[in-house]
Image 1 (cartoon, rainbow, N blue to C red):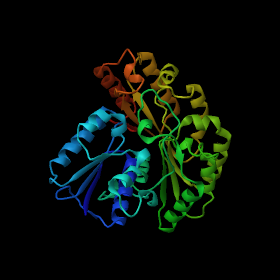
Image 2: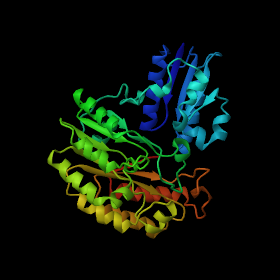
Image 3: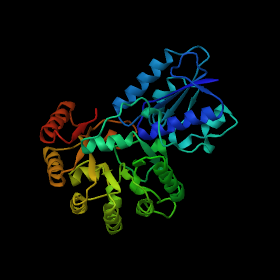
Image 4: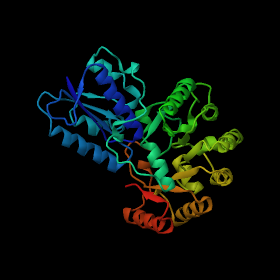
Length: 375
């Protein structure tokens, strides 16, 4: 049996894709580099915004053009839960999401179950990447994302009004501390000097099992060896709630230079917009916690959304002021994108695309060395 697997999603979906590859190989499948003459084609999609929806649909159509009549189409990732109407129009043989990967067993009926296949530390997205020596904070973080990864949990506890990802990833499901620490040790033993922890919200880790992310971090920094830890998408509400615990860990980690960088998505510098986004924090609390963290040697990045419904000139100016006050090493700017099924989709006072682009250009001019704009 031959199969083709391709991913149009984020790094976590890349890990899912590699897990599917490992699952198929465990069941004696041959993995092909193209969908032609394959028995199965697995396409892992993304539905985080309109552009990623369109890219996923384009990939499905392009891949289908290469099919033979015998090829069966399986569509995974987030799009099937976020926009089932669009996915069902593709007439797939099976649809699965990050929260129900076990449905592959029901459809394929193979000897080895996917539940027996652990999350890998690399993904199919990392193949054939030209190595480059990092020079900037962003390049160091991006390099870590392409390297040794540990998915510490799936799902999240948030209910952001603009996000529909939770419908696909489900409720929080954390891996055990022992398994994660063993993966860290394994990476170090293989000479991995950069290790990145990944989740929908790393800060929420452990809340489903009477543990916490600061407990996990404390266990990891005790591991001997030369390595730098990177933390992907750490919800700032958890930092605010347990600030003293995190400071103690960061202080200890600083002695051994064991943390390389953290991304802390904030999304807006306006409390009014944060409230409408259903982000669970006040911007003054954010500033009071992030400002003293600038003393550490690790890089600190964030995410900013521009053009959320109702965003005024003052709201946007508050965001600029916040970025100037904290002076992040890097940040990623996302233009707001309407997503059916979210609360924000139904909100009035949508910001015209021309104004969103104007505001993004203002950010580009002010923060040209640290900004990256996602379409």
